[in-house]
Image (cartoon, rainbow, N blue to C red; front, side, top):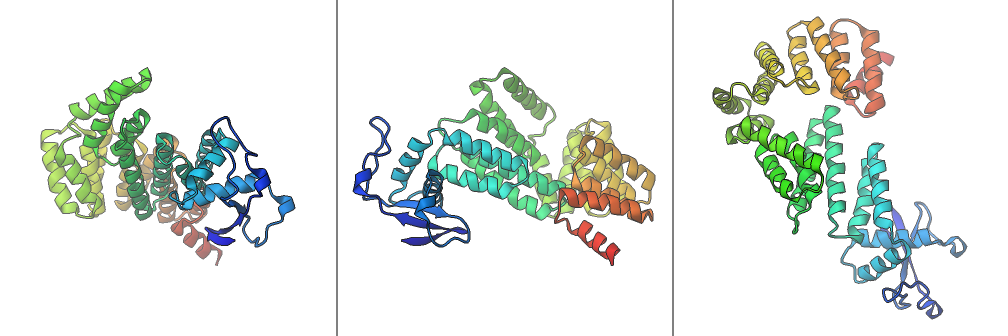
Length: 371
């Protein structure tokens, strides 16, 4: 019996009665010949060569069936089978997913985690790894300047973290990592709540100390202020003028908070108010916001103002702290173009394509140059 299963096919084999009890663990599992065994065929294959049949093909078939339909009538049986043959599969597949994500193969990492979710539907470490992979892919897309795609991935990561936060009992590592995720979204109120919930559950003194420090920082700088979050949301949605009103109201009370000046500069830059934006980003740097994002944003404003030397200085400083940030490298390419240095621009855009092969600006420029 065949049925489609993703890009491959699953073949179901009948189990001879003679194999009853062939795979066993004391008091836990034995083969039931009435339940067919799914076997996964490689892409392009349509027939199963029984001489080539392996445990790996059987386990892959079972995992595929569970992953596609965790409520399949035989799912529990297949789970028991897999865990009997491969008792360490949670660790093995988790490490494989992390390795794939580290190499930038996010699709394969998520496919592996889908399989693990089918095997371990409520395992918090699997939920956390999924959230981290989605977050890392969102970060990569944002660094590549693909903001809309990054937003989509952040939404998926947000859902994954919300699922983690809903676990009972709470999962300490989920709370800790969720805190950093929400900080990146400028949702400092939720980040504070995550760190605060983590502190009494912490079993790592260094992480506990870090969480305590971040809670103090968020509260002392007023980053959990509703006005700050409202300003960020408005600017992100393209309502910059409304966002300006909210962030200026925040800065009237929290003049010394660099994050507020960064948001102000971000709104002004998006409105094309380059000079005002440059002043705001400069203030953010002065107050402690010395990071690659601030310097990259400042460089964009300086570039538009025609101050190419200062813009290059900011971009090169940013690149030293974030050497694989595609946005920064791409902006160096744009700057070189504006300055009339075509060969240098081509070098930057080639580097961009090494890190992000689908980058549209780099591909278009280099293709045009070839023509």
